[in-house]
Length: 138
Ligand code: MN
Image (cartoon, rainbow, N blue to C red; front, top):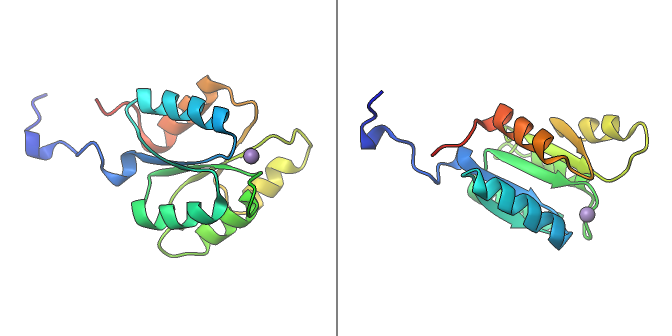
């Protein structure tokens, strides 16, 4: 199907932007590279406080949120994002290293829409991301 250039969504359309909140630099680089390779635009931070500001500024199509952050917990970040009219519609994937039972419930109760356990399985991550905001735009 022919698509006129002016009907093509810009690559930086907000829904193509993913905000990654992850304080572990190696994990961040891994996920960043994988999602960038898939054609998504990445905004990233290792701090929960910065995540709230970045979410308001960029209006990403998805937030990947680590639950263990150095400043405020991911649970608090999710609660604040879902309590803010500017950011409450943004889907959040909560990511936690805890393998304890009940963790998933806590993460979802905080306002996260989805849950993934660390270590992240790349196939699961990509499948979920594509389900939430669609596949490769290119
Ligand atoms: Mn962490």
